Image 1 (spheres, one colour):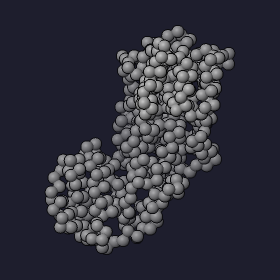
Image 2: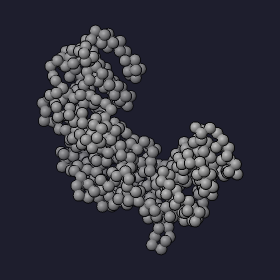
Image 3: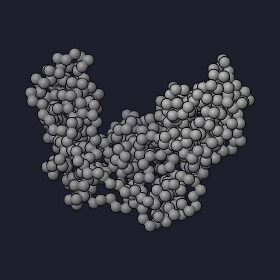
Image 4: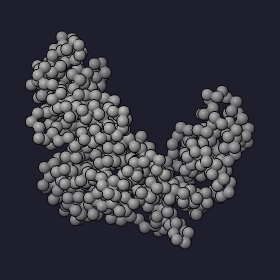
Length: 549
């Protein structure tokens, strides 16, 4: 109780007194305090805390109707307050139905049994299964649960710690995806994966899919998918939020697909309406990623799109559509701040003098201290010292984990847990120039960066610099995927004999810092466009991945 008081800055002494008496009026009082805490930004944490307290007191979530006349059982995403008001009404009418049960240690409904909706209870139970496929199937069924035909609100067991394969915020995802499936059903948008969409999804969901095949498959989806196929992919991508390889593939696919199909969407009233609704729903997932940036695509709208927005706005009874029409009409202007800091502690040019001597200093330290000092040393070496450092490290077989500096500090995509890949890298490193090593790995990744005559394809490079530093569609731990991007930048540096003021090395990570190619990519995009080596994208929005980082 103390934590919720601190959380909400409310006085709960009256609630304490009722609970000491085991008076069920406390449930109505708690619902009233939840309703009072009505500011969404400030109150979202509070509502989550209120739900936990209800779970402790009654071990139930009571489903109520929201502003769209749909049944929901979590209120921390209740923007308009209808669900919390209905929750308050429920407890005002039913608190007296609950009596304290000494055996259960909670309030128990004397008139209504939770067993009255066994199908939903069974699904919630299945979502706790240790079998990932069982839990996901149950979750998917729950997102398709249609309560609109029921006269009574279902009362469902509240449980936490569901299967880890489910989205991290199961309650939010369940609420949002339930609304999404209902919207798609009403608008005849299929969410079924079949034929090529099933093939694409199944392949991208594989954790062991090599990057080259993953990247080529992403490009195939972007190039060949139809607008009427994307809604199903979005649904299944979000259901699979915890599959990191998949959610980053999804982030790139959705971002680039919508940019390259933008005019097709904004010039079709129905497709534009669907996009606006998705933008509103996915933003409510309450998770980082491109899912909450859909409205940032409105960097470009023409007169035809404005007319469609006006038509949607004039007929919209849906608040989500009305609100997003207003935002879309204003448009979004992307302004990148000038890059003022190109050299800093975690990214600077360095050289270790007498590497062997310095290494010996580090290995004299106790074994448990090896990792940090060696990472500190990797942060100081430059490209010419990589083989010498690895030669020293390999004498101590315990230090394989420090090889991650190859990709983290130099952008070289080597799986450091694969000894064969490390051996292959060393052979190539000693055989090839730095420039040709970059070319080799770009070819290995399946990244097409050159013209048939072998010269650099600046237009293709510009496109990859724009769209290949990827945020996940949802989640992703706050990181991003930029495989191959730094190698492209190195080729430009070699070609034009400049680093544009950046260090020659991507990062001095020390096993702590993670550096991004974001700023370098933005500067090289400006360079290519200014020198007229590439043509800017016109009539379509740029990538939303870098926005909000």
